Image 1 (cartoon, rainbow, N blue to C red):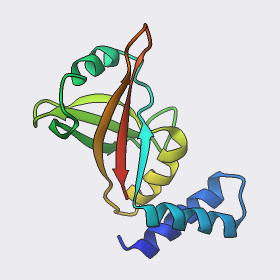
Image 2 (image 1 turned 135 degrees about the horizontal axis):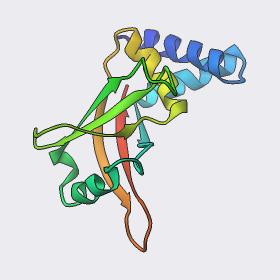
Image 3 (image 1 turned 60 degrees about the vertical axis):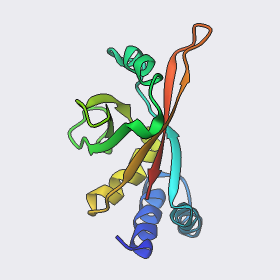
Image 4 (image 1 turned 90 degrees about the horizontal axis):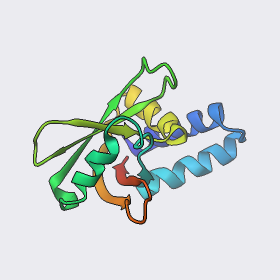
Length: 141
């Protein structure tokens, strides 16, 4: 997907989903597209056994952790949902959580138009002094 098409798709989604005018939506869309990547946390990491999984992931270097993004159109809470799945050194994939809702609205629009998003694991956050673990990923658009 070319940069112009990406920017147009993002601008339309921003205009449709956020309280913004079209000019501001295009300005923000071009800013995102020029940047080429977004760093975001993974949502939903406190559910199921995801805290334990993050504790284990902390032992590995980020380059050994593979991240795949999977559209979850039939998600009952968010039709724009995108799952974040991880594996270590090509092993079994584990559903770690979701892209945050506000970013998922933009990323889902790109994915639904055939754009492929590449994600990389950045770091495990928290986990000390009784704090919950979290995860940061980089999404290349």
